[in-house]
Image 1 (spheres, helix red, strand yellow):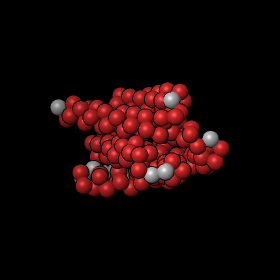
Image 2 (image 1 turned 90 degrees about the vertical axis):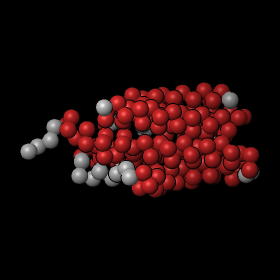
Image 3 (image 1 turned 90 degrees about the horizontal axis):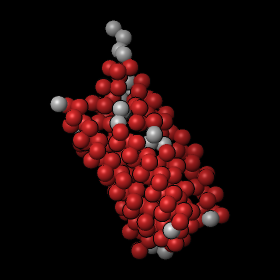
Image 4 (image 1 turned 180 degrees about the horizontal axis):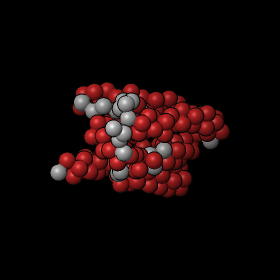
Length: 181
């Protein structure tokens, strides 16, 4: 028997728990980024932003293992789609490097907008308004704080992203609870 799109979405929502461990990981990493500015010279902070983003996914996988969430729903085509949607972020790295080389003070702006925008397809994949909040919250806070408060962007933008991701996790958990009832 062939599964309907609705069945596949219900399956991926249940199995991957709407991917919230990745957002939880991102909230922690961006909170650490917020504090980096106070501990490490700004030149190092720039590089930490570029390469430190790479730890979000592995930490998210670790969190998912601890919580018993299967983020690798490879038998579900929507799981594959979720991976394909996330993969283009690897192509953003050259953009981040060019911004770092030319105008490093705009790294939080650039990284926040690109990272935030990639969550939009998950609104549909997971039937989740929480991901719309994450997308808009991350993009708008990065635009406003990273674009207009450039002198404080390495503190304000990651703090805002961390808060948005944290609220996103809470909204997803509430959505999951509603789905179970």
